Image 1 (cartoon, rainbow, N blue to C red):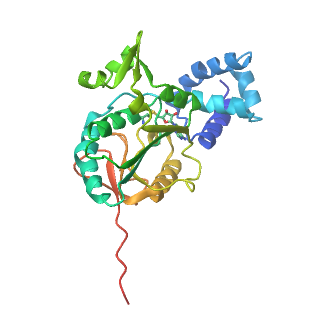
Image 2: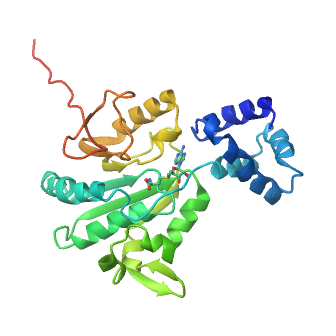
Image 3: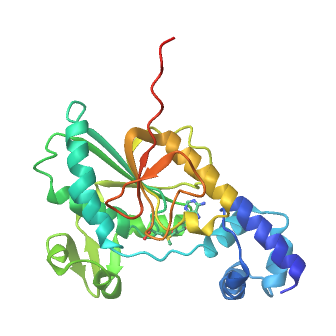
Length: 276
Ligand SMILES: C[S@@+](CC[C@H](N)C(=O)[O-])C[C@H]1O[C@@H](n2cnc3c(N)ncnc32)[C@H](O)[C@@H]1O
């Protein structure tokens, strides 16, 4: 691919999805965009890119979605879910005892396994949360991923990756070679598309935000701006949970790591006001 096309595409993706197109990803460009060009009836990727310069809506969306990495699994990095279960939930049970309201956001939910893993944890503790209003919101840039997540239908391979066998029965219903998430868990999660580059002004505060394995695709400035917005929609005593290889330290001063768990962050306390 011509270098002018690569630099146009890199600028386009950074602006539309935040993806920082590094040279190690160049080889992905051809295979992923070849599929999009066939779908849209272009001769080749060059012809697709020529049209993309006019930024037609459908094509722009298809290209940004095709370039995302949607790798995920149930209970991915299981220590994170243990931490959520044993440390975060008990604290919130006390801290929100008066309002009995809990809001959790999976901010890059891909095909839904992360959100359904949280739904299974919450469902396992349903007696503690009786009469609570729990909102579990799962969003992703990609409408294709959100549509799959909403279906809640997983192959044997996807089920085998990370789902403890004791959680399969009772939480999934077999449909031929596939497994569908149980209705009661499906209805615990509200799915919708949302681009993390958009303003967060319309969002109400969350008690816990899972934003795992997406910031690592952003450049420094985009990551810093996103962390800044996340800090603004996280409750003062809330928890931010990143992927195990991600950290806030170089990009944000709003968070402090929770020592007990890699990838887990609390908000830095605002300095107390001193009376003068
Ligand atoms: C690697 S998956 C992570 C899935 C899950 N959080 C996990 O850790 O298993 C990254 C997801 O981020 C989504 N994504 C990429 N850029 C995004 C953006 N700007 N806004 C929202 N989601 C985005 C992709 O569509 C993809 O589904």
